[in-house]
Length: 185
Image (cartoon, rainbow, N blue to C red; front, side, top):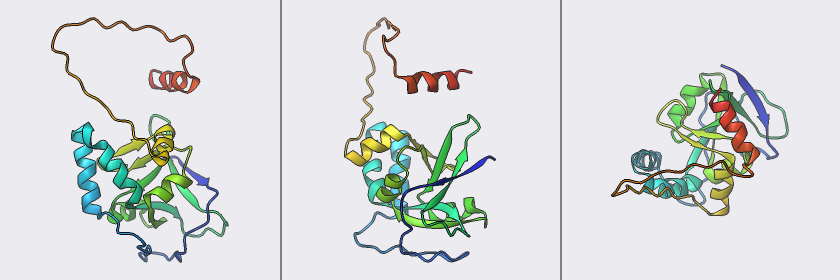
């Protein structure tokens, strides 16, 4: 697996990193439990109408990120991985045990509020629970979520036959063209 270390302009939280020791996160506000967050995630996968509930909960939930053990860099550095399709992503976990499993003794696990992790990783693709039932958040979705807007997927089942007409847009965004080229190579 290809691993890329990414540096963000953020300072480390007041957590002393220790090898194989679980760090604690101050609880200034009541956070949703791991079990509740994972239940919301499962429900949002099976019913897209529940996605907004999961995404809102994600902002105030405790998530876990992976970082190097020995890092004297003044900025927070998180691990970024590359999927087989070439997309780089930052893994975050809703469950501490999953995070330690992925760290495999080579990385430390940092607990942080979801909003903070998404703020410091703006511009990156994030995958929540990459080794299990996962959720991918792209940079545009993260920006919208942090700004308070959540895209809602409306599912409509047509009651009668209809024709679909697809036209090429006059000025398609470059990021969309690049993504489609990568997907269909």
